[in-house]
Amino acid sequence: MKVYRIERKKYLDTTLDCLGASMSDGFRWNSKNTHIVYSAESRSLALLEIAVHLDLSEDLPNDRYYVEIDIPDDIKITTINIADLPDNWDEKPPTLKTQYIGDDFVKSGVSAVLKVPSCIIQQEFNYLVNPYHSDSKRIKITSKNKLIFDSRLKNK
Image (cartoon, rainbow, N blue to C red; front, side, top):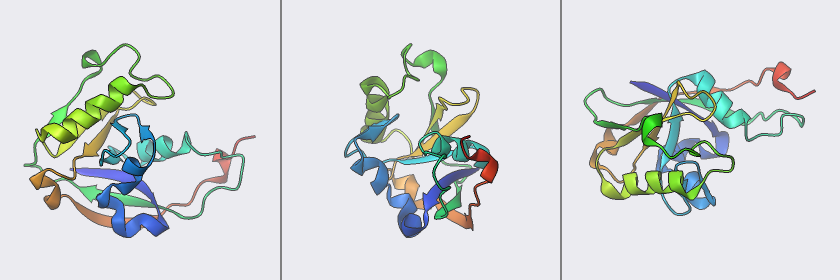
């Protein structure tokens, strides 16, 4: 299976090291110091997941790349459905409840990948990679392509 991530040029060589998510105060599916790699089921969802965090009224970023990641078909994927989530799972900013879901996933070692619904398009999914699972070593980057932001995305 192919999944996608948008990465800054300076982090391309460490994309699967998952340092960015762990160094922040946490994101939707992890708290600070929990290593996890965020990716999306499509390039367009990956773009939306990044765009909602950017001020597109400024100059559009020119240092981003689409990273295509291959997850071998025989790697176990744990799925979380919306019905399994707390009522406020998609709250902005994220709650500790969803961060603990990702933290527990990493600690449990149940699988290398966690499939979770996107807050932006709830019928689409993001895939979180647990870098500590032995199968994560088989997950590879297959391509890196420059992302050109369409100027129509710029806020008016």
